[in-house]
Image 1 (spheres, rainbow, N blue to C red):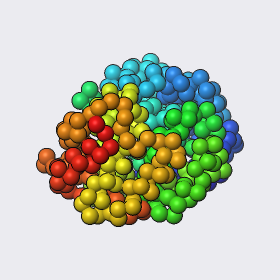
Image 2: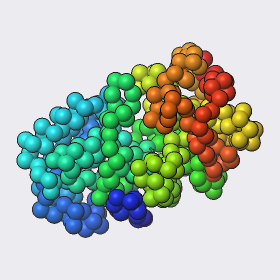
Image 3: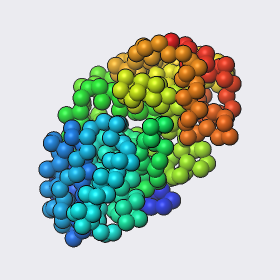
Image 4: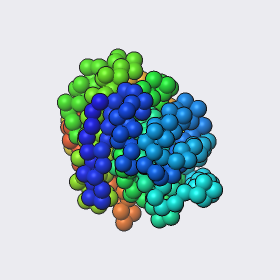
Length: 367
Ligand code: GLY
């Protein structure tokens, strides 16, 4: 087992990583001071709950939690709505949850973001515990306190920063993760290498087979390192005010636009991010920021992990993608701000990027 701490300005908390964690006495010991004699509501989805809700409830009950039954939402991004949140508020009232209660997120990014938003707002805030089950949630969304929902106009447009009390990452949960979802998480893992850690990037290049083969020892190392990198960034800029935290969105402005144009079904988040990182890397070369060989090296790693680096789902006009990118939360005063690589292991946030160059970068990988 590995453990590390997030030192966010609002709150410090531990992340524990290990195979079999939720089945262990250690998990019960960690949970006890957080939930002893408190009501709990586990929020999970229709894919994950049948697999792991009983295990998590049992750990909560052993740690002294009450009412640890699971509230189940439909699996998928289409559940990440205010409507779902309202349903969970009603459920919380029906279960007599009070301010001392704990809301426990069990699942990937969608249950995590929704449960966190419920925890942040129900009775103006209850305790919040993250138990991520997808690779993407383990390395990204369960750490750092971004919680919220989508609107029909765009992803994550309503939300809050609300840190969990603890993040419990049981790597055994990866064993049931479908390969497509594993790959999506790997796109975020590659992102950490490009933005912050050249050594991690090289390590990933050397172990693509193990990653695709669900090697849990390897995942303990990789997930811990990604969480460590994210913890550093969140410690420096919890509320994305200085621009430091924005580096975590490398590839995301392009990727979110592609996801939205595919109606959130043609491409999943990680697939959009993989293609978006390709567009950002090409753009960095065009602007003279990155060496010419960077996009090919990044593409080679993503392809070896089974991720597409071009959008081939349908034909999209670059102008359509650009228009959608203006809905990104990093747009300031109507100007795009994009995270672009300088080299593997270093990126910068570039403001007011030339539109023609952005269109060229999009057109080079779709249409
Ligand atoms: N997923 C990006 C962030 O947490 O800031």
